[in-house]
Every structure is written in C-alpha cells, then in structure tokens.
Image (cartoon, rainbow, N blue to C red; front, side, top):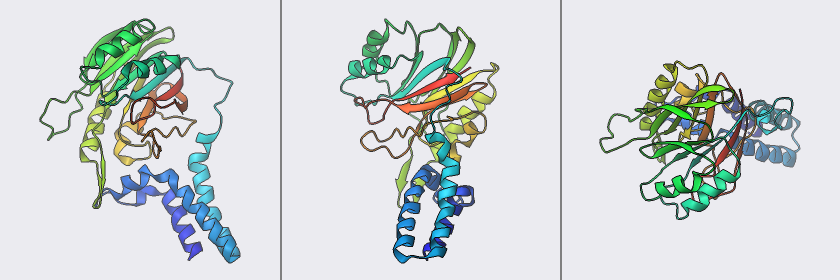
Length: 300
C-alpha cells in the first residue's frame, strides 16, 4: 500500500494534467497545492522506514525525484553571473488595510523600480500617492489597480478583463509603457477574480475567463518586452492561468508563497515576463494585508 501510494503521488507530481478539470476543476485544485505533495512523500518515507520495506523505500524515491525535478530549482540561489536590471514589487494591499501609509513605506523600503498594487480603494489611494510620491514620481491608476515607477510612464490605458456575468463596476486591469534605461517595457497590472474551494471542487470559471482575456491582450501587445504583475488568484502550475504561462516566462528561483499572509500555502501573486527573465522571487515582510508582498529581480 505504501509503494502504491508513492507511485500515485509521483504520477500526480509528474503528470498533474492527467487529472481532468471537467468535474469541479479538480485538476486546477491539485495544481494549486502541488508543492504540498512533497509532504505526502515525507509521510510515505516514514511509513516505509517503519515497515522496513525495501520495495516501499524504492517506490518513495519516485515522488521525491518528481518533486525535486519540478520544484528543486526554485530553491536554488539565483545565479550571480547576471545582475538585476529591474526590481519590481507586486502586492495586493487589501481593501481592509488599516495602515496604507505603513504598507507603502514598507514596499518602498525594498528599493524597487516598479510597484504594482491591487485592491486600491478611494479612501486609501491618496495615502499611497502621497507616501510614494517622493521616490516614485510616475504612477498610473485604473480602477482598483495601480503602478508606481521610478521611470517615466506613457500610453496608459485600461485593460478589459471583466468576465461575462459580472455586471457591477469592475475595473481591474491597466497597461502602461515604462521607459527604463534599458528600453521600453509594456507593463500590465491585473487583479483576476477570486476562486473558492467548495465541497464540489474549485470555483474558478470567472478567474479562468479573465485569464483568457488578459492572455489575449498580452498576445496582441506590439512591444517586445512585457511584464505582467498582479494578484492572479492562481499558481503558475494551475492550468487556469495557461493563457498567460504559455506566453510568458515565470520565476527561475524562489517559491515565494504569498497567501494567506498568516500561513502562506500558495503563491497567487505573480510576476511574469516576455523577452526578459524573472531571475528570482522572494516575499517581503507582512503588511496590513492578507497577502505578502512579492519582490522580483528582472534581467533584461
């Protein structure tokens, strides 16, 4: 039984796409928590040692190898041969954040070139603008998302990622061109709809539709270099984000679990790039939000 469980765990790690999404989006649910299957391998190893079973011990090596192949590179330190041309911070600041000024100062203290924020509410927006103005003189806000920059911005416009069925005012996407010393970059900031884990599975249809709309916008982007920053309410392994992950590169290093802030179990705050490399990701200390900020080093 231990050996059979080990083989099954290895198969899920190596081929999560075999689990269908047709019923309850079980495939996406598995992919959301895929790194945690490593704990299953640890438990199985303990059982194999307890039973002193050579067959079980050999079988447990399969999920260990699969986990190491998939997630091991993320745990390695970033290569020092190439530096970061751009540092960005992505943070869902929470519409219930009681200390927006402290949050803004904490994000600026990381020294990024760009800061992308989601869940900006009208009452807190002037606080973020005033606190960040000195170090980030350029910014753009569209609905509840915003981008602050050390470098000039131009061609700012909204990006329509509202799924069908959402009728209320819903404005969660923007695009701007960042004029960096290394050239122009089209930066997208987005906040995709939330997902819910229910007894029937994962409720993610709106998130998936919004991801398709954002992916289409990125696919139509004429500028070569693209950055996508946002609370995408999904991990890079989740097939629901495939319209983005098939077009953009994800982090080479760093698990950077970002949600929930108290006990992070998944990274749903993402930094992705086209014609650039997301060299590493790390989380920053907690703010007044239920998400942890994520900082990324970009090589251009």
